Length: 215
Image 1 (cartoon, rainbow, N blue to C red):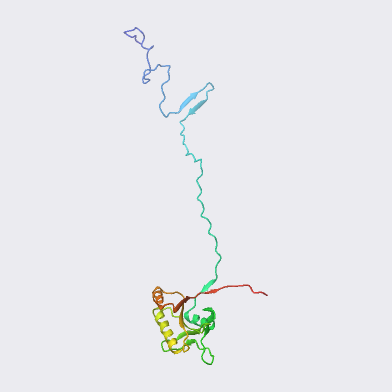
Image 2 (image 1 turned 120 degrees about the vertical axis):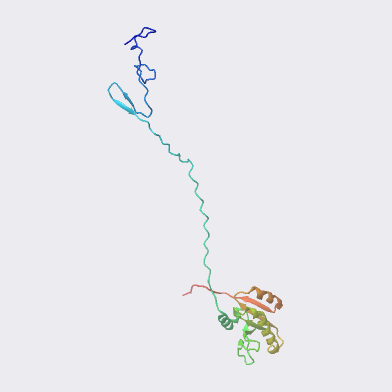
């Protein structure tokens, strides 16, 4: 070992290890990052300290999600009577057998001998479905048109009424008409409005009902 030319001290006394960045030899050198640190106690037990990665879980909301309100229950309706559709021929037969269903006190026209002849009454302007008389003795011309014959409803009933007034109603009784159909078309409603109330229009519906039988 050589002495320092400036202070005279030996170089070994102030020498430091190379790479310690000016630290004294008795001080430990700094550890590199991400290197496990080993600590030794008096009992020669080594404990390794490693870096722990902590993953934070998302916090749950304190308030529970609001439940969607269920729609109010609709009130149940009791089923009504079953409805049946009849063709014009069936309606004609029903009215001929029970004319009182159409109007109270209505009866089929009878000839001089008292024989009912009003059902399918023939005329030169077309067959009359039912020729009837009301309680006052007035004549009622009843017509049940076919579904595809709506264009001739008003004209047809007026022609039949005119013929009955001229050739049948010899006692000068009034003559009026009744048209029976399931639904009145819009174009027919305008023509019916011009009849002056001498022609009535009636819709029909047949329903099936049940009742208990007393035993």
